[in-house]
Length: 117
Length: 109
Image (tube, rainbow over all chains, first blue to last red; front, top):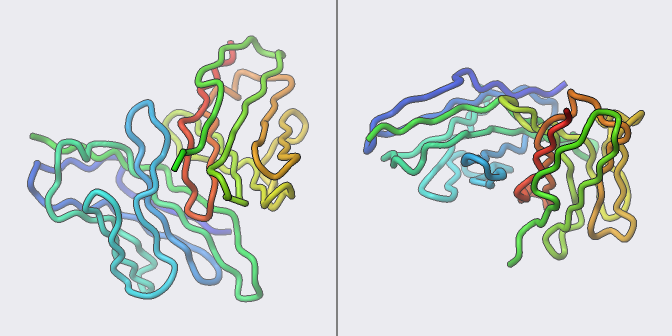
């Protein structure tokens, strides 16, 4: 069964500093990987995805994520954090079967990012 | 481009009552998902449609939950009868990248 782990419930970072939100996954077949952000009382917003190609994926709002196959990780990064980045971040994975077809998307439990002014 | 629409935004019902949620996906998106998000947890997939066919409903509690997408466009999710533990936000998403609607917050008392 596929799974996603977000080992940190909360990440605190000072405004202007680089941020990293960690995600590791377990899946059979090739992974499709996603990051979503959820602001208070709002739905999830798609940030970025990795399907194939360059291991460094760039997404919305200046975020990027690095796919590392050997470490089965897909950490979310941003060079300079903004107070407005404070939100709940979810990593998600979908396994793609070599025989065709895909598994359902599995979400992590989320990491709360707090950017301190 | 209009986003995913959901209604109602909020619903309060008593246990054992029934409730229905509606979702209109982004135009042209063949794939539609319903998720349940309990407070403090990540979204859990309830059901996935490809056009009007069910792709995955392995985590849908079929004794009380049902969903349909008759014309391959909008969809309804129904709970009958509701239990206290069904209190959650019900999210609809469409497309391969899963663009989410604002969700319906259900409170069962």
